[in-house]
Image 1 (cartoon, rainbow, N blue to C red):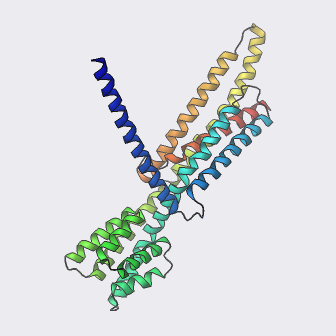
Image 2: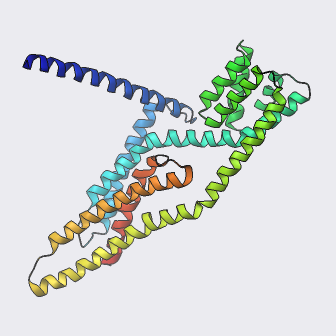
Image 3: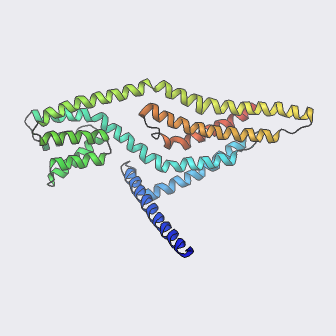
Length: 320
C-alpha cells in the first residue's frame, strides 16, 4: 500500500513538474516575442545580463545612500537594497510589456485614420493592394509597419482575409482584431469594403474618444493616489516615527524602561503597511484607468522601492 502511494506521488510530481516546465516555457517564449517587438538592438539574454548588473549597482547604491546619513532609529538599508534589486530585475518583464502596450495604443489611435484613408483610396477606384501600399508608406507609426507585412503576405499569394487576420493577431491590439473580423465578415456578405471601413472608422474613433475622456476624467484621482499614498504617507510615517522615538527615549530615561522593542515592532508594522499600500494603489490605478486591477501590477516593485526610500528620508529628516 505504501509502495503504491509512493508511486502515485512520484507520478503526480513528475506530471506537475512537466506541466510547470511547459507553462514557464510558454511564458518565456511570449516574453521574448514581446521583447523582439520593442525594437531594442540587443539579444534577450544580453538584455537580462545588463539588467542584472544594473540591479546589483542599484542595490549597492541604495545601501550606500541610506547609510550616508545614518538613522537614529533602525537601519533598513539591507531591506531597501533587496527591494532595489528586485525592482530593477522586474524591469526585465515590465519594459517589454510596457513598450508593447505603448505600441498597441499607437495602433488603436491610428486605426480610424488608416481605415478612412483606405476607404478613400478604394472609392477612387484603386485595388486593396494599392490602398495598403499607399497606407503603409504613410506616417501611421507601428500600424503602417504591420500593414506593410499584410501587403507582403498578399504578394506572396495569401488571401486578403488570411493576411489581414494574421496581422491583426500579431499586432496584439484587441481593437484591430475586432475590426479585422468585422471587415472579413462584411466582405463575405458582399458589402462594399469602402462603406464598411468608413463605418468602422467612425465607431473606432468614438471608442478612442471615450478612452481619452476616461483617462482625462480620472487623472486627478490617480494623481491623488500617487501623491498621498506613495509620497506623503511614507514620509510622514518616517518623520512621525522619529518623533515618537525621541519622545520615547525621554520617557525611558525618566521611568527607567526600554521602548526599543516597541519601536522596532512599530517600524516593522509601518513597513508592512506601506508595502501593502503600494500594492493596493497599483491595483486601484488599474481599476480606475482601465477597469482591470492587474493592468499596472508590474509597477508594484518600483512603487514599493519609492515608498521605502521616502520612508527612510522621512526618518532622517525627522532626526535632523
